[in-house]
Image 1 (cartoon, each protein chain N blue to C red):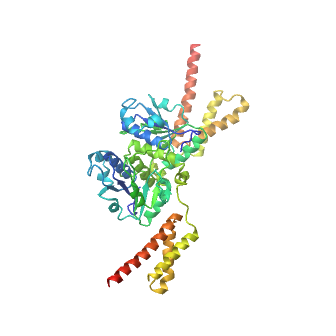
Image 2: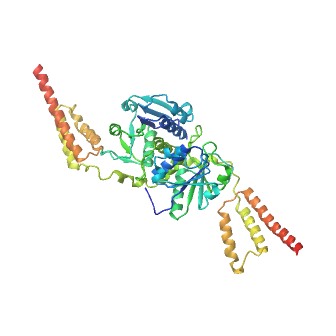
Image 3: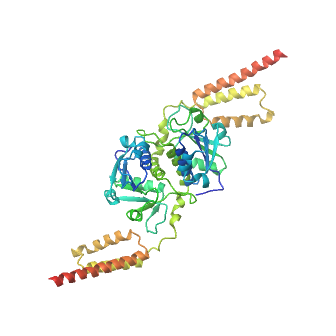
Length: 256
Length: 256
């Protein structure tokens, strides 16, 4: 899901406290193809060994981190800024959620705007001054009875939303490794084989229920959408069961 | 976003290694109104102090955790199971992404099915036997160049997706605290006040550009969707600037 040709959102952590959260944020950003991480006055300075450990190598391979003294400098090149906050601020700002924001963000990026998302400190969230500098409040559909969100998890929601734009392309991920689907005549061959063996075994009782019993079984098996090799395997299964039952009968008969 | 009346998905961590990840998973589940966390053979046993620390109180207030020896017992009451994995397994299973899965999941929950999502261990992911027991493979739209996902972050994506079903209800979150939007005649009053002062100040030059200059400024200001008190404030701003300029002129004239 890397799109080198389009602008991507910057994620801005404002006065983050724990290196672990910075590292986890970088890792999930890299996971979803984001690379622009900005830190405003991180409490423990930079670089930060705890961040490095939690990043799983994100800083080396996927994410560029920059440190700024002030929010204003961190946002200097941005055109549209979202402030993530769960608290009403009594400000007149548009409010949006992650999904709508990601759609809006993608269209802004597509026309070359630099978008930024602000995340506040672990303890206190974003200061009002940061919200004032933003165009839009971004708030999550959170459980009001348990609403304290971890910083790295807050980042992960928006990183995922950015990556999710390409979810429709997903079925291709595993394409080409599957065996070919069985044809209808292979399926019918399987059904008839099974039905013949069930007839022999006296499965269809009472006789007038036979058609509906066959129909139900065919419907159930058809839904599995077997592949060619699976049909071959199942033919073998039926044969083995039928023969095995015969064997068992023969053994029992011998005992009698 | 709590829906006590409907079935909710269970999140199943299969042989999780780090208590921190169990705690973080519980916290984000609680954030998005989920409460059914199941642990299969957690490496460090249970309870786990590291999980408790990271949970931010989730186990006390939002999430019920249960521990099982085997995956089979953990899934005993489930009707539909998703296996999260990024690796192709060479199995014939439907493959889905988080967004489509969340829609599917919600409709299954709505008819009372117990849905479960399986998450594998930090180091190794889900074992093949767990994927075999699942109905569907759930895979994330991940950056192939940086694809190692943290367990708690993997959980956060699906917890968020569950919560996001209710995102359309979000604008209500901050409803009722905003001041009323200015009426059109209040806006026109503002525009005319501003335009009159600009006229006095000799702002409109050349004269034949006046209409388009007014139009551009009205368009720009209208987009802000001012409230009534903001219009009052802006009227004061215009008055102050116009008067202030007069004061400055007077002072300058006195100096001359």
